[in-house]
Length: 382
Image (cartoon, rainbow, N blue to C red; front, top):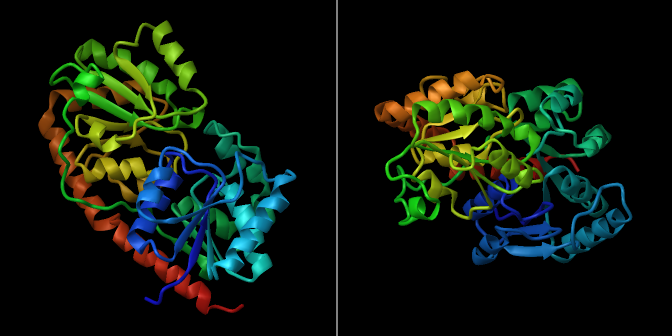
């Protein structure tokens, strides 16, 4: 494939799904011609620097779309595009899409919109899933702006086409991917000791942003049910977010702090997966979480919401994952107790999940498909 100079525009380089997916993508596609523009750094900024990815900081701190910062940000991006002969602007996260789209149009460059958020979900569905992001109301004002739109779920695709936000031939359904290093991974020494986990006891891992749409409150109902049957079981809720301290206080208030730990940011999710009995993600809203792929790639059985994102599109209940009702704590507790008591069940499901991940979600395949999108939009009409 011909080398194409691409500018990826994102809001932060914190440890989130969109940011991790971007790192995986530029690592697979080759660092030389992929530039990343961001407004402020975060936990994985150093990973991009170590890979030699060219970074450009277009702002200091977080800004809203409807603010005086927008013309300044767009101007800076436009100057960078021209100075570095960027051919494709590839946007991630809605704020970054608005700014990147305006800069691409000002400079006559092609625009690829990669949707990692909930902009193309019906407002009522978003709000029932506890997502109240007001700026998504501007999404339809960006109608037919993109030369290509990359979506992660069939639901998003149906929404875009039903609302005529982009021509069908410009829409691609491309799932996230990760690097498949091999089945499983060695567990770093000291993980159980550092986190005070009982030797040999079951560990249930929930890596997520601590926010309402992730349905973390379900854990407060599930944990007592599980520990009644398996007193050695421990739950780790890993990640930052606006509700982290609220959940920590709630765990103490309900006397669950010995069983349910809110660790905050952890740099090595794979190390935690290495000691985990199951990956547990009860979200109301998702698209295609990278954390799920990390669990599958390490043969850790996945227990996830049946209705979130593309779970029902890519997973098969009882074969390579458990797909459960996010409103039914009894259902979740029963499955987790079953996995704790029957290691063979977890191993069998982990094997199936690994094969699915290896077959469908290798980042090399994802990168090749996205490279094909770049070629198509560049070959299209001006």
